[in-house]
Length: 110
Ligand SMILES: [Zn+2]
Image (cartoon, helix red, strand yellow):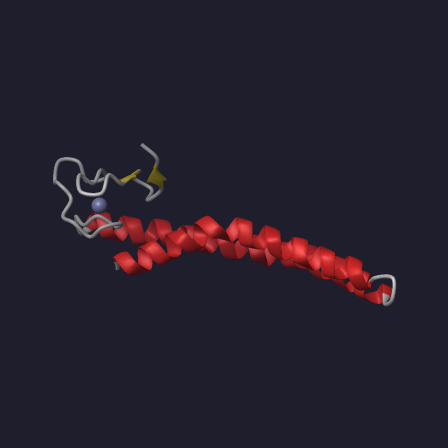
């Protein structure tokens, strides 16, 4: 459970940067060949624009999955991040690893 949470959290944190560099790579590759094969430029533009919607959608799904894991874990009084028992009185602050979450499952930076 903690491994899954930490993996999905890691994916969520690198996702925007990874997408950004993917687009940069596509742009550079397109620029390199667009004078030889202009159709590649058109295809690349269409692909980039069309892929934005599923890429953003996939990120929203991943973030929702992360929040769902957190809510699940808090309901079982376990810290989503380190797996330690959470104190009953304050179920969203972990004393062991210092992670804090809001009621929606979003990680709070303290
Ligand atoms: Zn913890």
